[in-house]
Image (cartoon, rainbow, N blue to C red):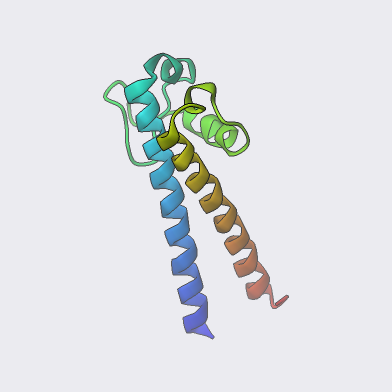
Length: 111
């Protein structure tokens, strides 16, 4: 049972890392191609990537991350690359959340 639990945790963490990477790709693309919108969004950093203008902390990152889950920004609507990053980000976050709920339920003996 321990090994199944460990494998599930590793898979869920891998999915979370995939979400972080796609969020970073999306923010980096916005920075490179739509800098005015990036500034208007509060100059968010990624989870790993940071723009040269940013320091260590980016207070706008969390707000932008939540908004991206439910709304496609205007600047991304005609960017196939951005739409793919968004799709992968949303799918990864959904799988991450389902995986965490599964792990909690399994840990509590509900499953």
